[in-house]
Length: 104
Image 1 (cartoon, rainbow, N blue to C red):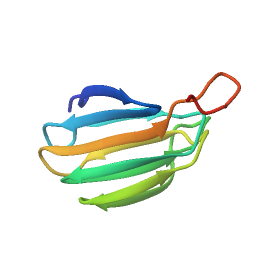
Image 2: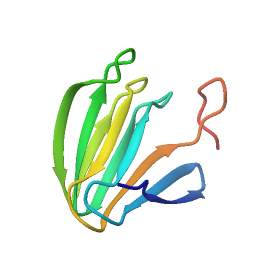
Image 3: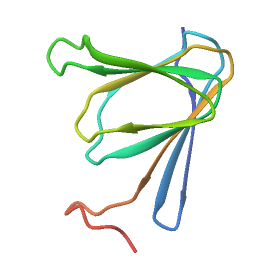
């Protein structure tokens, strides 16, 4: 198991964080975001788990097969695990100020 290879790009006010999971079982460890966002699964398949903030144990999970999007709620600790070699996902969201205003 390894972490995915990460590429980050910003165009206008859109932030994209692409994750390339080279091998089945590669994992993006639990993290949360300040805002709702979508994750595009463009290749392969991924297990998306929502984790309990305290125990870090899954409270829900779903398998997403490419091509597809998954909606991630703000403040939800979540983990992504590749279910196929060469799985590619991208978190996509608007860039915001510290006051939650969209950047122009």
